[in-house]
Length: 163
Image (cartoon, rainbow, N blue to C red; front, side, top):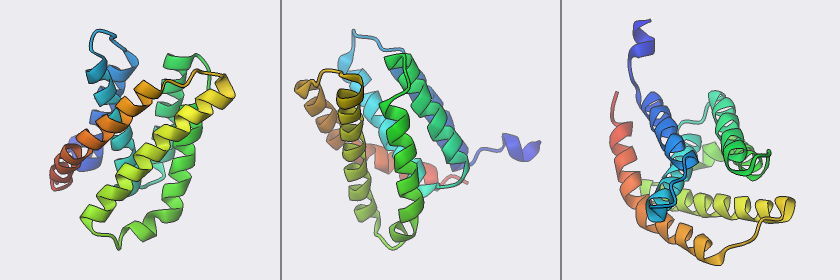
């Protein structure tokens, strides 16, 4: 019981994931920039977990969050679940290649994966669910990702040192 209560970095990330998920599913249109920032943080966090902390438990975690986003936002199963589970398979196949990369290269890979993941979600939503494509929102997410990713990466590297 004592080891369950002891926090390690993986548990801290899961607590952060729950908090950020709760914020983004309760969309408040009064602060769209803050909402977009948390949406980008959520994606960066879920990718960070997949790259740095890949384990079988992530299949359940990714499934729940993908399903949760789809149900809360779209009222049907769709793009988040498909993209999250696909990315987890990608992480499973590529984790051995990430070990040889420097911290900066992993940071660049994380940004590329995040932008690709968000793009796939938008395209799957457009093709499967006939959702309209909003270029301004898409650019806003891309810029938020680029602006927020480095401070988030530094913050996560501090959490990684926590034992």
